[in-house]
Length: 269
Image (cartoon, rainbow, N blue to C red):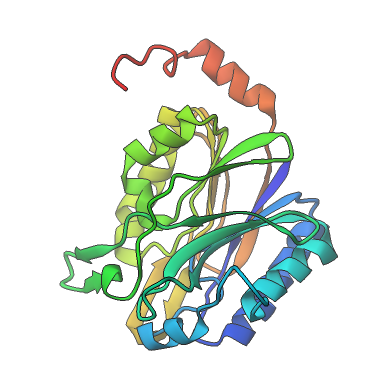
């Protein structure tokens, strides 16, 4: 399976962001990708008020975000992970941060809601409190896609290896981490965390990240990655919008798990 990680510099215009998404989905399809991963905040990257206004439901009549992603999947014949968009929750002030997988016919295959919310004070003094504007999910989600089991997460989730153990226990072979890693945290931790999750899980890891400057003074790190089960970076972007592509095969997973059977040697579960 050929996979693509799309890197965006999303802003606070849903319509403009979705035009950029379609451009890069089309480019990924032209590059032969079967599965395209979009980063967190692909549809909206702005204020909490704007995020609430942009929120859509997965049930009932499709809104602009849902309709666009379904049409892109069908038009370009690719599966899409729409990573990190505002999904309506029971709390009108705090939508979920959702990652939705669309099959190549445009139907919704599964939906994951970000479990770990980014409530931190960075060394620079910047404070971020996702829980003030987002509701947390509770379910560990995997899905079967094009012959592989895919495990889902979003951004800050990557710092919690226990989640990835559960994804592996459920058969995951590919782990997706759509992200909006900040410039500060990304510079020091992005590569380490992505490669660590690949090595310990013996899975392919697809990290699609945001890049550059966004509203409200936010900056993100870029360097979207595709990492193999041995921890080698097979493809990496720089700090501009674009995409990276790699071919994933089941044999590479089997070889690593056979030669280094760490998952079978586990004693603490």
